[in-house]
Length: 339
Image (cartoon, rainbow, N blue to C red; front, side, top):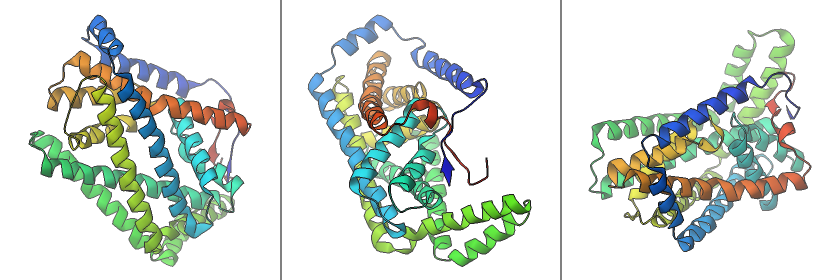
């Protein structure tokens, strides 16, 4: 129930996003001595960068295994397709505005496996909730084990986000256990729409409810939660290696603080979090880890390249093999007559 079609007309969204990205980069680089920044980058330790690249690729293996667990109750998917489609989806999010990869993955998996796109999209929503919950869990571990004082504002924001994530996850589990109730609510809401549009929206909503099946099967959900934990621990390990490449050393639990800041950075709707990712790393490293601005900025640049460049190149290679182009991917959208 999704389609890929080329966009037409003046690309206002692209222009606005590009301008916003440039502004974020200017904010990140404001007041930085570019010569010192260049020297710091030139002195980066290649062995640590190589280790960070290996760990980053491993995170996508964990993402693929987690998605397999989430998709298992609604049809299942092979590891090969799960990994390839996960990489392609994140590549689309990295290089294009609008987080299109979140819509592209359900579309692609529905072409390759006996899984409906709306049901698969429900697993993407569950993924994001698991990510947020795991990030906040690790932040809690940091608060309990670290002597770094992050201040009441950061603690309060973390606790509030954890509460929202917990409530949302409990709400999804509660709703998933009562699919007929969710369907009745969907029927009520879609009943306010014009007849044809309402019928399509109702079908989409019912299939979306079916996609929450994993929340009714504790075994698969436990597996997905376990992979989420391994996933974010390896992301933290990649941060640790990338920071060490610039001689910015820290206790491993301190990376959990940076993870929380970077989660905010990548939530900004710009491709690959360019600018916002860099600024949030810089802010965390200079505010709490005693790093100089040039050192923190160099580490942010290295970490960004490690996190996004190798996997995006792999994703573009997969797209080329599958006959997908960026122009076609830009048109992905949920439809089923809803366009």
